[in-house]
Each structure stands twice: as structure tokens, then as C-alpha cells.
Image 1 (cartoon, rainbow, N blue to C red):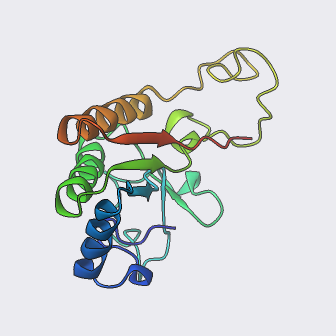
Image 2: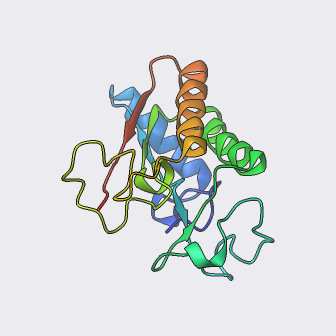
Length: 164
């Protein structure tokens, strides 16, 4: 789980070493895509943002699922925070795009949990025909994709969808 949105994992070295790695990859003609888990966060209060006054960033505690803290996308503050994160990686580290991790947490109000998606239309409507798509999450992904391609027109964006 992500604990710091603005720092590469120490497995990639220091920020300067990671920048050098990206530059070296580019020198070899390779694109560098960053796995970006904007659909969930580390619930650990010592390492993550959970100790922050999470009201603008996180769903209520009742929506914490397993070992992850789920973000909310209906708050402008949360969307701006995450969009600034995309901008940071594109401009500061010159990455070539993103793989958005666990977009079911972003696209669905129920976070895509406990559903096998075997029925037509269930992606957007639940068992009781109530809407289950998260329009705010969809808006965030559209904004993130637009921002990414505004900064880096040749960028690659991938959505990793794993629901059920």
C-alpha cells in the first residue's frame, strides 16, 4: 500500500538515483511507467496519511476494506492532491505514463467487492438496480488522463481493473 505519494520506494534508490534510472532507460529507448495506486492508501498511521485529518481525502472509517484505506473522489481537495501527484511524477521524474492500480476502488461505489460481474449491465447497476458507478471517481480518472496527456502527449495510461 502506498504510504508516501511523492517519494519513490527506497528500492529504487534516492530520488536522484531514480531520476538517473529513468534517464538511463530513456537513453536505451525504454519508456518508464509508474504504478500509481490512487484508489487506496496505507492505513498505517505512522507511515501513511491515515493519521492526517482524513475527512477530505478518505472515506469514512466504515468503508475501510481489509488492509487498505479507500480514498474518496467527491472532494475537490482529494482530486487536486492526486492530480498534483500525477503532475509531480511526470514533471519531476519524467516518467512516461501510469498504470492506475485497482481502479475498481475508483469506479464503483462498492469498490467492486463481492461481485463476479457475470450479468450484463452490472458494472454500472447493482443487484437491486441501484447505480453503483462512482461518477466522482470517473471524473477523477478522466481528469488524470487529460492532465497526463497535456503534460506528456505521448504518455501511456493503463487502468488495472480487478473487481469481484
